[in-house]
Length: 381
Image 1 (cartoon, helix red, strand yellow):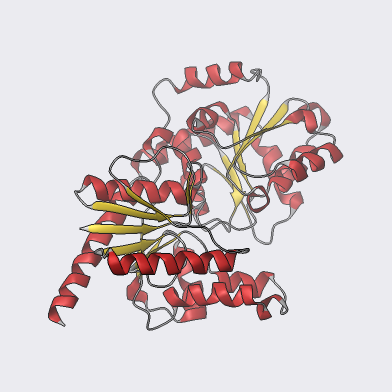
Image 2: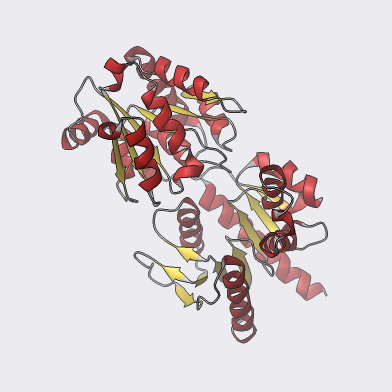
């Protein structure tokens, strides 16, 4: 089969991008040909992928999106394929990988009425409707069970079009046998003393991930403990506003920002707590990456994967609506070596037996089946 993948932009440190690549590679491993429609590709390109670069045209996101869709549709007429999988919400897909939450729900709940009169709002709602509205044919790969009833509330989407995937943690995140030595090596490299605490945040989109909340929680620590606590923040975003907030809170010396990196496993082993007080998060793969590395987690309960932390008894879930005082108190209670060791062991025990790794294989299984069903339908017609 020839499978097409639609992705506006690939860069190696995005969660959506990593999911796309792992699914596409699994399909390629099974003998299928892979074509990718992308406006930009940063980093190494896989061998054997037919990468089609879509010209970037337009002065804003809706215009660029429309130009992207127009190009893909024209290219498909002269270069047909068997099945088209999208990782962004656009019309004309056979299958959509639902990494993002419901746009219409967020627009109604978080934006004013004037915004909902804008052409930008109409554009993104139309794209979402082309996938989720009742009567559409696009199949949907869901990575968050919590989002299914939300989409059905706004679009009356048929239940049979949803296909729920298990998590897909990369196995290089699992704590190795020499985890203790790796941890010591990392902390020595970055000058973290044995009696110091290292908080870790990982993810692009600093505002969405709640970096401001983490900075305020660090500032709230008792002075003696605060001087022994550092926060490493890794991700693709502009750190400027958060550096200014850190300066205002007088914790600049405690903070270190890093651009996207490919050695996240070392950070997971070297840290003491993953802090992830996200404002909203469809899944939160980093939560599971911390879990399998044995790193205790504090996160908000609105993250799609937060329930795994609760099941594993490997951290704290902050309830919605979020209160800064709750986070301040909970993270302080986590900063106890006996408690940390208990959460660490709980995480490793859970990760040993739970299915947290099979998303790419399951997604490829479903895509193959759906493609075969589509072919059979065409033949019968």
